[in-house]
Picture 1 (cartoon, helix red, strand yellow):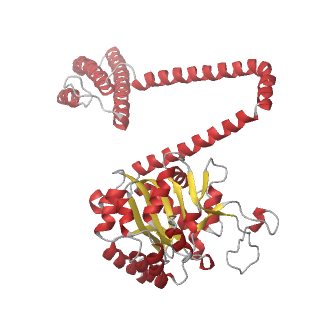
Picture 2 (tube, rainbow, N blue to C red; picture 1 turned 135 degrees about the vertical axis):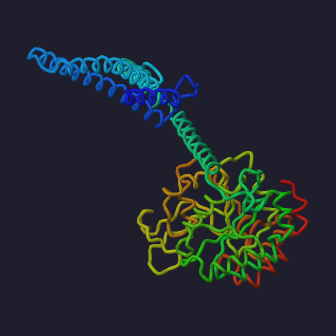
Length: 477
């Protein structure tokens, strides 16, 4: 009796505290917890039914045994006591069966399984999809014979339409790449805003251009000469970023031994000037193509700009003239690739400067490269930088970084803009052009692929070919 009453009490407690109980108005659980509770409920129901069935079977055996004993004339008193216990046991058996069934239903929280409904709906949806696919296939089969000749005739007679279609598809692919890159930059985990400079937070404002100055660990004197000439410092640099929308940073990766003396020297220099952009890249001359790719991918994720510029640290730049040159292309050419376009020879001979190990890909020996911007300075629009960011793991790297960049745009609907002001020679060439009112964007020596001995000579180039400090603050982009 006490055991039976304890069982009833236990079921009543389960009835009241069950997470899916309607008596307490607690909403049912979801996900894995709901599946576990439902499975538990069904197990309680099944166990209750099995217990009732076994109990009934035991009672029948006891009744048969009692009848046998009565028939044999022994144990009358014991039989009456056994009968009384059997009567009580049937009552509690009935109550326990009902309790098990009810508790199980309360765990399930419905007379039918929710998964069954979802399965029915999913099955219905899949059937409808299958019907659509099969109908579409039938329609295509019916129309294929009748329309194939007509379609082929139209295509053969309209090559202009094919060109337009190819251009439209190319445009859509580039726009899709830009949209995906923008979405990834938003969703990507970024450092907390309080640890970044105001100009380095993503999504805060729109900039005209980001200028990345390619530099190396051994180029400290070059960097200082750039800071002393055409790159604004301190408050002027912050003012240029806020008022003119121009970001300028020295771009460098890390050494082969991260945290070593070279990296610590760059960190100390950055703490002093705050003008570095660090890349997840191992520095090395033979890794310039990879560095260029990582630079554009990183820059487009950090700043939302119209153009992204790469320049070497031994080149003199007139920032205001560069800004006005890019601003003219901002609205008319969304996929612009600006620079001094060239098509130099493919050098197959080993040991020479600019040797191309994959020369065989460019045809017969003595062939020239496709048109591409010279590596001292070039600029690309945001769509192209986003394209590089999205496809950086697929883009092939050639030995020369300017060739690699040009190769990434082959097959895309890109506007190649050849502007010779981006590759003027050092004085007197750039000086004469400045006196004639045609200020150069960039100046360097072709023989040195930059200003020869730039750490000493760039000040002279700046004095004779510079646009003047007021040009930047008076410019309107």
